[in-house]
Length: 310
Image (tube, rainbow, N blue to C red; front, side, top):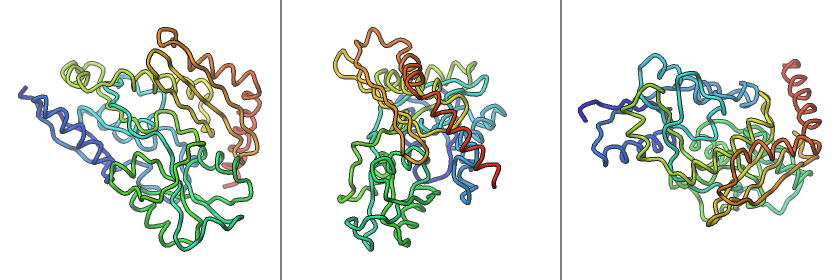
């Protein structure tokens, strides 16, 4: 094992934590590694909401290019940031065991939550839509940046609070004891999962990474991403999905929301694990037939109108 595996990662604290996790796992198996840090478009452009950047791949594109140019051998991502269609030549090599899938609400201690009609912050269309669906009297503002920067912005704001992924806060040991778990909010497809990608022809890295793969997590996120890919049609939309393995059964919930939270279309199903083939596609089509296609068309028009007005 003389070859050194070059691991590409974004340079945020959370991304480095994730990459270091892969380093530790590979080196425990006897592989040699080195970290290569890059900045993504999503990290550099903090003045625009994610959906205005064309969301798909804004956090992964730079690493994809580095891999295709053979500057790194593998790359580590938060899987919810990864487009459902990978660039030609790059493949999913390992999905690590999933962490907490929940979203949490962190309140601003200077603005008591009992007040209504105030403002919460999130950079996610999915979180915004679900919050407004439950609390239509609220306003929302965009919140961008790495976890630490978003926490600082919250602390110095007049907002009621902000929404975060529990997994990121837990990994950085920043989850406060008074965080409110939003168990009613569907997570992003693959939230809480880490993905490692490699070049399709790199048998050395593929064999090494297969040893890190968690099959149950891989199955669940594959179904969630099937659901997302079938619904999305190239358009960023407020979509939540969660698949959970319970003994020999897979439980799935998915939903599409209007941008302003005024509409919710959902599906749910429990199926035996030996009958999950194509489940994400089937349920997405069911949702589309039950009003989802019309809602997606409305979302696309609204987002195009917003983009044209900029």
